Amino acid sequence: MHAKLVVMQDEALRKVFGARLKGLRKQKGWAQKELAGRVGIRFQQLNKYESGLNTPPADMLVKLADALGVTVDYLLTGNPVEDSPLASSRLFRRFKMLEALNADDQETVIKVIDALIAKERVTAALTAVDAAA
Image 1 (cartoon, rainbow, N blue to C red):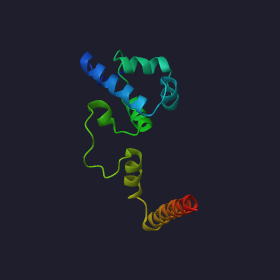
Image 2 (tube, rainbow, N blue to C red; image 1 turned 120 degrees about the horizontal axis):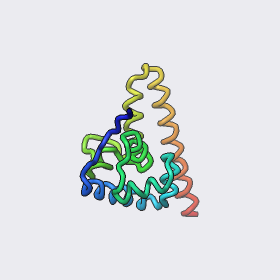
Image 3 (cartoon, one colour; image 1 turned 90 degrees about the vertical axis):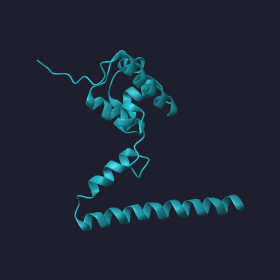
Image 4 (cartoon, one colour; image 1 turned 90 degrees about the horizontal axis):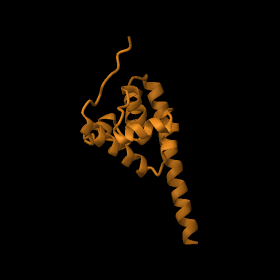
């Protein structure tokens, strides 16, 4: 017998969740098929989530939140995360994992990040020069 995690038994909560999910998807400019493909489900199932008929299991909540760039908490409640210093929950989680690396590996990651930031600044400066010319 398989135990299924029931996240939202109340129909009103499912409807509010579905509306939030749909709104986030539309903010990205994605069709249901696009988001469904990103999280590995059929668009018909996504439609059931968005309409409040079905509740996604916990692992699907994580996939949906990652795809939409929000936290599971925000997806479920609409409450923004106040303690996250980064707007991207994916970046935040990865930076938290980097803390477990040894000092040399952390330094390597910092150098890569610094190089990407420097590249972006040079590109922006060159674009500004080209625009002025």
